[in-house]
Amino acid sequence: MLSTLSAGRLTVRGLSVGGVYTALYVPELDLALDVGLAPRSFAGVRTLLLTHGHVDHVGALPTLLGIRALHGHPTPLRVVMPAEIVDEVTAALAAMSTLQHWPLAIEAIGLRPGDEAELRPDLLVRAHRAFHPVPCLAYQLIRRVKKLRPEHHHLPGPEIGRLRAAGADLFDVVDHLELAYATDSLVSVLDHNPTLYQSRVLLLEATFLDGRKSRDAARAGCHIHLDELIERAELFGNEHLLLMHVSQLYRPDEVDGILDARLPPALRARTQVLVPPAGPWWG
Image (cartoon, rainbow, N blue to C red; front, side, top):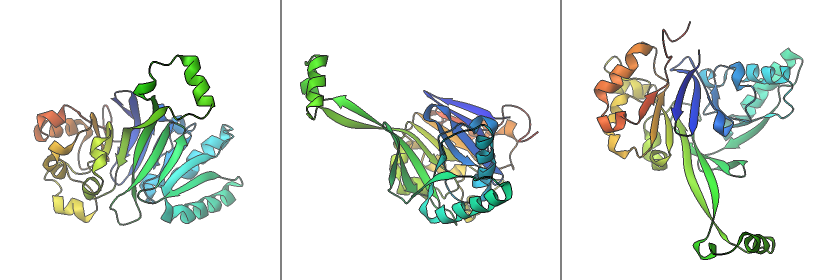
């Protein structure tokens, strides 16, 4: 069963269990985040952001493409990924296409830290460096809005239209940091990319939550421990902090209680966690 979190005007739907699978969907942005599973409801998505090439985050890409083909989607899925893995992902899909006897085509966009790609006229994605044993990116979704400059506010609509048609520069461009996504990384991803703290919604891994796994053990696997987020609690300027990628060391029904006990109240009030609404991690 997919879990759903509401974060203002955005919805995050999907599943994420540390080391097992991560697959998330943000319908308002027509965007999927990693594809360790391929739920049928993700099939119509326009863009997929892959953080890295580990199979629990990319392994179900051929399945997702197969579902899209079954339902006749005419446009190849746009897949944004670390530039270093474009050739390997393309080769893997070519091999699966041979098995399938059907082309599993994508529009591959390889990014490096600092690169941007336009997803639609008012939405772009910016790549940030993440820290994992393989090439890995964090992503920031930026809504770009044109606002009429104050000195032109008095102009009637037809006059604004005439000036625009004549090429006049009437607008300022304002960027809104809508969503950031960082998983499978050392907490250094926040230290090196502090604008992630300013995204309206931050979707962030918290693989280990208490003493059942030490901070050193978490770091050895290039994952984040809740202790490290608590130390940085005052830095989170996000309206919504959505935690995910929780280890199966923890029962889903105990995770909220751990957060209640450990997070500072001001941060806890803005924090949700992606776990099954009832029952075990699977079943």
